[in-house]
Length: 113
Length: 115
Image: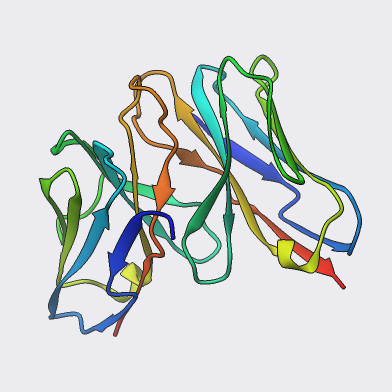
């Protein structure tokens, strides 16, 4: 059974700082890994999707990397802004078996102005 | 706007009521999902529909009854719920695994409170 863990659970940084959010998964037989953002009481917004054959994906100030062999993914946020404050979730889609995403518990990010 | 719309956004119901949550996707996807998000817990998968067929039921109590009349619509029928069922219910859609881009898109959720 796939398990996804995110560290840290919460993070507070001053505006302008570069930061890294970590995600690990126990079963490396993934089809893809997806990063989401969730604002309080709202749904999930897809940020980046990395296919199992890819090493990284970039969108603006966001860069996500994937290392299947070690069961890790990181989300790098450059030059953080107060508007980046949200909960960030990673989720793994398995290659076989379960046909839906397995989620981590998320990292709650606060960027101080 | 993610292309996945959920209604209602908020719902308060008594334990003896019957209500339904609705989800509609305008992305041409062929798989739809219900997730439950409770406080301080990871998102829990409830149901998966692929090509309008239920392919996964993740040990969900029978007081939750899903319905997928076509590939664009998904319902969650609720009856005789318990207070511990209060949560944010999220709908998602994607292309089914193994068919091109399987990026998942979520609706805004229905905040359900059972009193």
